[in-house]
Image 1 (spheres, rainbow, N blue to C red):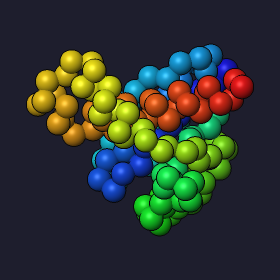
Image 2 (cartoon, rainbow, N blue to C red):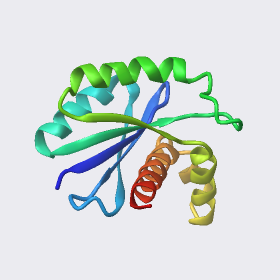
Image 3 (cartoon, rainbow, N blue to C red):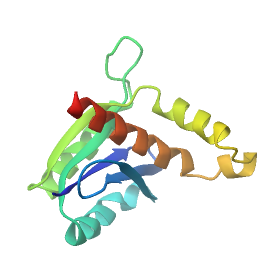
Image 4 (spheres, one colour):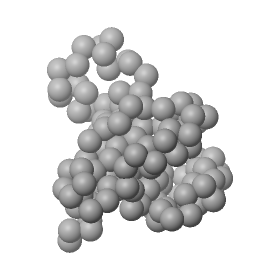
Length: 138
């Protein structure tokens, strides 16, 4: 089986997560600068078979797409253009950043560790991918 990859898109950094080859669990990948993420994905997909890329879709409390979609939609279009053989989907990412920060606190990370750029982005990507996998099972 091939892998599924998730992206928590940000203007400066993108958190990344990927499944194991059986698509059972999600693991974080190194957070990438947004300007470098497409190149990283090209290298990654040359080494690993990826079936789908899931991009977190930020929504407001009413379920409408948030204003940040104006940045994410062009990114999704770039992915579709660059990775024509990989399915590109969006998935609701509401509250993943908040949950990621809570997980860092609950995990006992010290303040300095919690402030490391990218740590919460990676956890957010893992949460997006885990939620996506759970929805697929049900």
